Amino acid sequence: MRMVAGERDVLWPGRCRRFAQSSGTSDGKSKFIPVTDHSLRLNHYLGARDVVAHYLHLYPESRLFSGKAFILGGSFANELADVPRGVTVGDLSANLIDAMNPMANLLRVPSKRVALMADWNEKLPALIDAAVGQDITNISGVPSWFLTLLRKAIERCGAASVHDIWPNLEVFFHGGISFEPYREQYARITGPARMRYLETYNASEGFFAVQDLREPGSMLLLLDAGVFYEFVPLDQSGESYPDAVPAWEVEQGRTYALLITAPNGLWRYAIGDTVRIESADPLRIRIAGRTRSFINAFGEELMVHNADRGIADRFHFPGFQKGKQVYEMLKASDVYIMPSVSEPFGISPLEAMQMGVPSIISKQSGCAEILHNVIKTDYWDIDAMADAIHSIITYPAMYNQLREEGLREVAQITWDKAGQKVIDIYNKVLNR
Image (cartoon, rainbow, N blue to C red; front, top):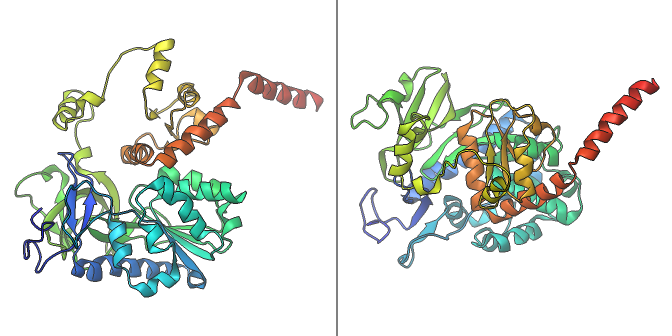
């Protein structure tokens, strides 16, 4: 907080006037990451240029620059009571948009005023107003935010897909959370043959990697973007003096906790992410999760961990529930999750949707074949589930979308209709 207050030469030479508010880790408190002029120039903006360069290398026939970029960012809303004059604190994306070269505004929408709005309910229609009618060729942002926005744009325009609104849209540069829970939903509102996706690893602490292959799943670590990387074996994560290895000594197939030293004043800083080495040369990684996820997922360790984080009061183990108890519990819930390894059908998500509760289900469940207005993840992907939960409870527009569309969808699922489908099948067979 000394840097936020204006003190010079604390972690980096000079005075820093920009800070990215980032969610906390083990203590639940927010962190305020310095966004220095050096980090903007040597890391964040250089990383953004690398994204475009890699995309154009993969798709030289691209018409990316024939239109505009639709960039969805955050705001300068923050939890600090007294921010000094001339200092900005907020989302990293808000800082990047605010500090962007004015010439770049000619190639993107929306305007800075709209992009930095804090009220999402006011911002959402303003974003659609700014983008509809423009020749959009690429979009950039967090998958959960953009999914809600694109659905609203389709509804506003009476379109069947986003390409009816922006016929030249060709790529979504995404990051921030796992894309997998949203991949199927994006496929339903885009033309799969016309839409491409490129993953980025751009965190509040820095821009670290970009997908450089057409196949998703790994990202090329940016070794020339002002960041020195160290990798800590998982069995030493959290130790005071771990045996960290540099980038040129990592082993393919191993998972490490990531340490960075960067031009924003973070020195050997543990960002809390774990990465799996997919290729050592060139160095490609896959985000494996958070270091705090690598704990005993069963029994007392988990209980103690929850209590230590001060969230034990938010988790209840009510035991077997029946009849009215089920509906009372669902009515008191913000999100329903069914992370089943295997479920022949699974009636409980329908009960949750019937009560207006946004739902997350595993792709391996039987009901995943018929339900559309839910978020689907692999049963083992706890980080994707966490991202989905966070998105639903954080963004009212997304919550309302899943709630309202879920209610409409489940109202159309009846035993009569299911029975009629079975009768129709028999009739079709017998008529043959």
